[in-house]
Image 1 (cartoon, rainbow, N blue to C red):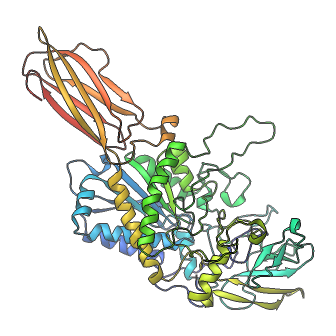
Image 2: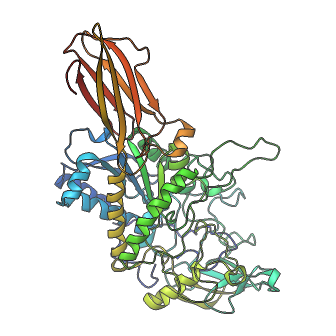
Length: 581
C-alpha cells in the first residue's frame, strides 16, 4: 500500500525556470516500483538465490522504513567481505526513481544470470547495492497531488520564521500535480522566453532585458507573509546531509552533517565494509558526461580557510576520463545520447562523501536524460547544478547549453501531456496568477520502455568496472642461498585489473591501509632483516612492490609471503628454503 503524503512543497528557490522539478503529468508511470514493491522483491531474491544474495537492514528511515544493503557474491576462495568490492547506492535524492530501477535491474541480473562472465566476476568480486536510500521521499511519485520531493518524513522551518511547514504548495488548478506559478511583477527577475513561450527564463540586464514576472512553486500564501510556498515538502534532504562540503546555510541540509538516520546508516555501512574499492551513485548528476568540479569551501569571515579537500585529484580525473570513454561508447551503441547535458553533484552529497571522505573512486550517474537538441542555436543543452537549486539564466544570452530546452523538445515529441499549458488562476486574496510548466518527475523518470536500454547499459558498466578493480597478486619469488643456512628472499607484487588499488586522494588522506608485502618466517626460521614488510600507498596496473629479506633456517623450512590491502584483496604464497619456488 502506498502511503499518503502531506500537501507541502519542495522548496526550489525563487530564481527557477518552470522545468526545474519535472515525469508524465497525466499518469505517474505505473511501471515504476514503489518502495513496498522493491522491499518485497529484494526479500524474494534473497530467498530464491541464497547462494548469491544476502540482505542486510542497515537502519531505518526517518519515517520508519528499512534501509536495505544487498550483498551480491558467488562462491569463491575468498570471503566476500575480503574481496575487492564495488558499492552502488541509489535514489538518496528521493526523486531519482530511474536510479532505483537501475539498482534493481542490477540485482536481478546478478542474482539470476548464468553467463560465465557473471559467474567469474562473482567468484572474485563483491557487489554491494542499496536500491532505495531515501524511501520516505521515494513514494511521492505515486502520491496525489504529485510533487517533486527530496525530504524525509518530518517538517522543517525552512524560512527560519519560527513556524514549521506553515506554507506549503497547493494544487490551485486541481489537476493533481504541483507545477509552477508565475505572477506579473516588473520588479521580478524572470521573463517569458521570447523564443519559447512555454517557459520562463531569467532576464539578462546586460542585454537590455527586463524582468516581468516572479516565479514560485504552485500555491497560495498560506501564512500571509508575502512569500509563496516557502516551506518544502518533507524534512531534511539526505543528499545534502553528508559531511563533504556540507552546506551550512541550507536549512534543508539539516542542523549538522549526519543528523539523519539515513545519512548515518549508510556512512556506517560503507565504513564497515573496508573492501569497497569503488562507488557508483545513481542520482541526478552524471560525472562521466560532465567531469566533476568538486565544491567550494565555506569559510566564515575572518577564519583561516579550511584544509578540506574539495577538488578531484588530477590522477583520479584521468581515471574518470578513461572510464568515460567506454561509458560513452556503450551509450552510443545502445542508441542513447552521449553528448547530452549533465548536472554536477551538489554540496553535502553522498557522492562527494564517498570520494572526499571515504576516499574511493566515485561516479554519480543519472542513468537517463533527455537527448540534446540538434540545432544550430547556442541554447542546446544546459549543465545545471542540483535540480533543487540551479539558477535559470537566459541560455540564449549566456551562450550556455540549455537542458530545459532539450527536455521540452523531448517531451513535446514523446510525452506532450507532461507540458502543462499556463492557465490563469485567481488566488483567495484576489491576486491573478498563471499556473503551468513541466509535470513533476518528467526530467528524471521517462517511461520504463524508454528507460530499458539505459538500464542494460548501466548494469553492463557495473559488471565491467567490477572486473577492472585492482586485485593483488604475487608476481615473483626468489630464494638465494648465502651460506651457513642464511637465505636471501625476494618477492615482487603487483595487481591484476585496470584500476589502481587506491584513489590518488586516498594517498593524501591516508585513511586506507597501504599495500603491504610481508615476509613471515615459518617454524625454525629466524628473520635477520629487521623490517619484515615493504609498503606502498598505491599500486597502479603498471607498478610493482618489491621486498627483500635475509633469514636463517635449515633447508626445507618454509616462509610465507603475503600481499594485501583492504580494498584490493590479498595474495599469499609459501616458499621452501632450498627448493625451486
